[in-house]
Amino acid sequence: MKHFYPDYYKNFKCVAAECPDSCCKDWDVVVDDDSQAFYETVKGDFGKKLKNLTAVDGDGDRIFVSQNGKCPFWNSQKLCDIFTNLGEEHLCATCRSFPRISQDYTLFCEHMLSFACPEAARLMLEADKNFCYQTDLCTDKSVDYNVDLMNFLLNARKFTFEVLNNLTLPFAERLRQSLAFNAEIQNRLDDENYSPFDFSQFTDVSVTSHKSDCTFIFGLHKRLDIMDNSFRGFLENASSHAYCGKISDRYDKYFSVIAKYYLFRYYLTAIDSFDVLSAIKRIVCAYIVIGHMLSSAKDLTTEQQILVIQRYSKEVEHSYENSELMEEEFLFNPEFSAGHLLKLI
Image (cartoon, rainbow, N blue to C red; front, side, top):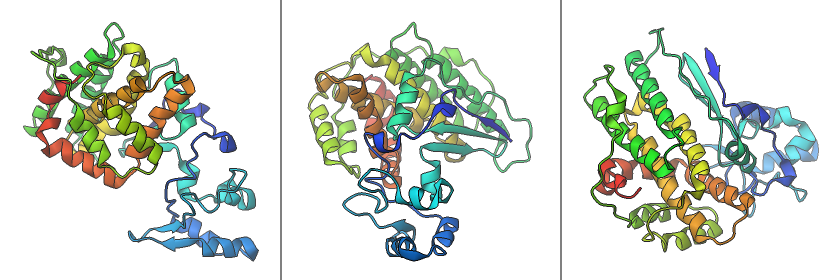
């Protein structure tokens, strides 16, 4: 199996107590079976604490019992008691891996970091180099998916990356071209037509009129399961600017990185879902919501801007329920059709 990593991946290191928005708060931590088996062997007071502060939730997952919205092992020094008492190797799988994400496609595996981690977000947004991405086509057909489809998706994603990397155009135009192109890719997926064609002919976008009302996108986000009330307030404030026209191009560098992250993370899931447009629609939503958040807040420092982007990922991406709700809206709500979204960008 081949493994692919972005250039910044190897530079990630947890900043622990210095983190401005720790992964030890807000989320339930799911404990894997191997870690749980080890925790049951731990003796003494700390062993008792491990046993007393784990439970099975309504989904049947074993979790650490949250206390005031925080992991019970996150101490007053903002450090992990499990790390301190048992060593890094005995953190549960969730805590050992985050913010690292791996996408396994049998013949190759793509690795990335999650924007939900402030330090990972900083690395990605400040990186000078473009994302690396899987470019080798599959030749081995001994897999349980359609290799012709995977190669079609790899070529389409590569071209979408090239569109997004065309820095001679403002990001909004690159996003419009990416959306128009992938609308055609979606048509071909629906027809099960994976034959090669001239990609470039489908990037010309003719939009007769722009409609700046994107309140339905904010409406969807307000229906999500939001953990942090301050983020909800930020979302409410930004939604009041949803009629205010285009988003400033001063954030184009940020959105270029965010868009390529979404492609890297979500595009190839179409091998199972047969839906490439959902990845592009996620980018449109992030562009609209984060763009208005940044525009509506005054005098944000660079660090604060990065935290806005990081918090969006933490609230939106890392919840199965939120993802399911968004995917359902993307598929069935006509306001999220490619044609309608093109008028908003």
